[in-house]
Length: 148
Image (tube, rainbow, N blue to C red; front, side, top):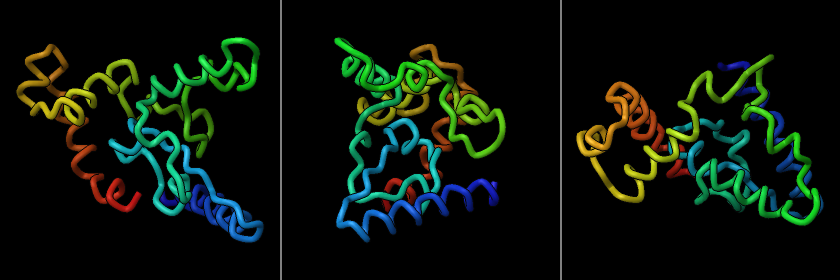
């Protein structure tokens, strides 16, 4: 994990340096699903002056990409269709660390937007172990969101 974070932080540092040198603003592309669960590296892939996708859940990012491509391919389709990955180690997939986004986004929506507690979310039919694990990630990583 430490080595993976060094890779992300080195990339973030270089991108910030380029932005500073040329008077640009570095856009952070973290989405709400990643931010909520802490699936990002402070001073690495979370670097940037403006979080353009910070209030969009992962599945909303995919929907936005498909909308942008509605008339012609602007965002390469392989980016939209490949399995999500931080790409910090060989064959890494987001699903190694996070629940499938089709479930995660719905769970996070109940917790963040609807302000439902663990018992209420479990009563909606979510797996109790998954709810506990996910909410622990969210609450443990509040410090990252606060800095972001």
